[in-house]
Length: 181
Image (tube, rainbow, N blue to C red):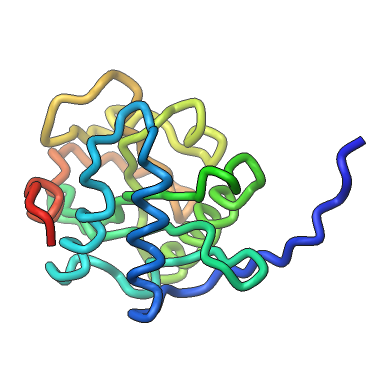
């Protein structure tokens, strides 16, 4: 029988003092990931420097005082609207499959909803993200600005409604750069 966890998980806003730990976390989380290219920790840094990061939506999960997870949301344009992009979501490999990613996604969605955004957009595993209410973005007319596998470009309605937005999503330029920061 599985023993109940005594770990204390705290979700909070990232601070500059967390940047080094988050870099290490993202590096480790994506180190052996199937679709990773090694750029993920640098992407986080580029997004911070670009001003695309929404500070209230850069969250960390602490387990017993140690950073074990991180999620980042940035603004994207979709037609004449501004929406959110979730990227990346990272959890230390030794802490995966314990609900930390789910806590981060749900906390980010709740904050995004309070801030008034209609949608969160993600490029990711449909088997994972569909549990949070993500569905193919094409159903509301959204298209990725780059080739993606069917079903992996998804959207989640934060306000509980699904207005159609026929547009190609415009990401921050930092997503398309590959230089280290």
